[in-house]
Image (cartoon, rainbow, N blue to C red; front, side, top):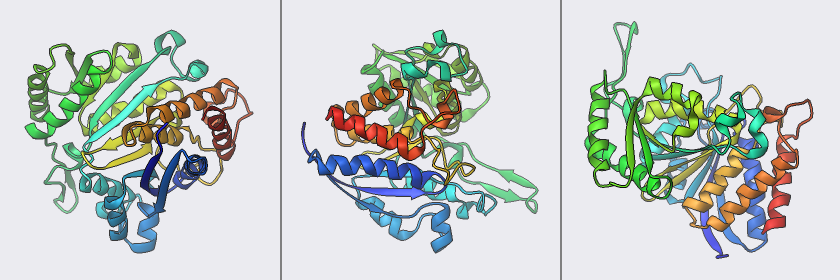
Length: 359
């Protein structure tokens, strides 16, 4: 097992973000103490807490630290206090700006189910057993970033621009095809090409790139049908490739196949930077109650070891440790079938103990 040296930036953010980051730090500290790693980490503010303290959801100090870090662990952004702010002062704008600044155009969202949680999903076990999907979402284009955008007619009309270039689609498509070559060689590209010019360009470009990957079975699906098929027969999918808006919707839908949005991690990558975060958001309604599920954050660490540190052995230890703890019957409130459940800190400590047994 190679020793990993790295410096990472922690962005706890808002809501339950600080709680799940705390459980991540437990594991990083252990790997440092056991001489597996030499990972230094620093903290910075983003989102609502940054607005409170500096009137900016992405302060200059955070940008500087982010640019100089090897990778970033993010808790969550979003607060009810600031949800009605103008766009540039919304907590979420800090994360969107960070993605754009670091060119984090690749978003990877694996969708899988631990065997012990088969009954936690709302779908019948036979539809989700051995589920293994990865959603590749383009992250810094589309309607979230397209210009012009805004309001006119005295704020009586709002408008956004859905926009993609051939280059933007080509680079995310190539990544999806490369991922598929290491999996089942099947890519489903999701768009709305029957009514949107943006999607027509998307489909044409993906098809063109697909010609360079003759071994990959490429299919196209409209977003409305994909959303239905993801519930009807999720195991028909392997790699789903899609744009920013559709990917946002599909990945949250897919997370519920696993029984809880608190179970799934994500990675956002560029050629030189990486950010890892749970997909569950800030969940302000349960913040501070020590009941949020930390597993998505812990599995995000596993993705960090796999993608940034090229240490699949450590990544596998973390994943196996999570699975072992779940098999033992330890669950958090969101996946509990009874009134008995582990707190956030208890689940984090249980997983850490299991990691210690496996290192």
